[in-house]
Length: 68
Image (cartoon, rainbow, N blue to C red; front, top):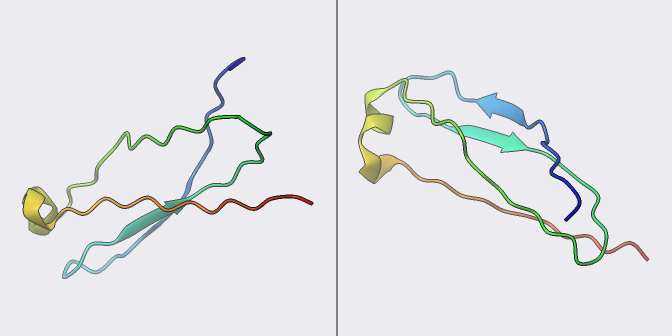
């Protein structure tokens, strides 16, 4: 790996205090055998539900599209 590139994520956050939902997305074009690391560097704790770790879910999904 020649270097690291930081990608900016687009964040959408639910404004309701009854439920907290935040999502972020980013896209990058890779070459064959290139690696990607995903890191959560900040966690928002604006309501009581997030302070209880039993309600805190973290999920990552990725889509790979092969260029023909």
